[in-house]
Length: 426
Image 1 (cartoon, rainbow, N blue to C red):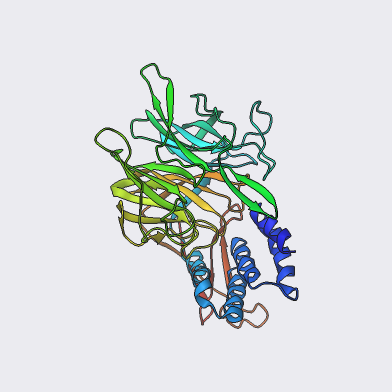
Image 2 (cartoon, rainbow, N blue to C red; image 1 turned 120 degrees about the horizontal axis):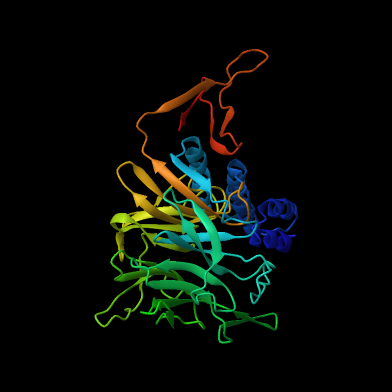
């Protein structure tokens, strides 16, 4: 039961995982860790009260409340954030999204690069055994003034010439240097042994592509790839191109995958990697960094209080000096995985950009969303009360959900002690 539940969780089928974890934790002799995993799956399904109950049960059973403190804080925070959503407005980019995965948009001029799963009819692209889908490839699409995407096609610049996963992609400001994450294709990866069997892990490596005078692309591996020991990927150059942030599980981090950086040297090479520090890195995984205006770092993590899976956070600073990360709350974040948050426009009236998420209501596994955040000039309130329809008596603590025209959840909260509630509308 435990293994079946974990299989479904690894495949991101959280409803099936919830079903099997519910059975596993009810079995005599079930390990306490199953309560934590069950709680995490319940969070991914948006069932925060039930998730908190399982995490508290783990703390009571093991005497280790610190081990689930972050998860419990996330359950409490998610309920508050859904009751008071930010004014981000998300739009599913249906032209590029399919029933498979598309994610990690990076704009270059009037086009974007993004990563996706080909549909299996593409010749020369193998199948990833874990999912049964094709290995990831890099795509391009046209980008409109409102960030709408159209005309998706496979990238042809020589980026897609590796046999396994390729992507995501980041670009320097001039668009003539690309930083591409790839799965190592050789046989020298990290080898582990379990139950007399040998397993080879294909780690990630980072490649730098430079455009020559004729428009062709020349590639070279990042100097600090080490396929036998750890992964390197998810690059994010600073605005001036002199600092390259990236993700790695190399020794010396805070735990899981961390954000690291290298500085460009006088001879153009990259300096020794430095961990970006404990302020933004956690005992969990930090992934998909992007550098926004004024040095703002946007990235995803599962190691801080969040709504479930990966949540998007922001911090201000550079190198090893950062403010404490701030969760971007609902609806940027959801019970699912939310990542690859990137700004394309930022001004006094608001901001715009892209986000990737596997939240419910999308077209496929991971989808690309564009978003806008317009600073409100007026505030529109929807006020109401909850009452027993038979007696007319006010009901305190009733659950009230606000939907948009497509029956997607906009906000959720409970009525107060006098049965009243209030929502801020667009």
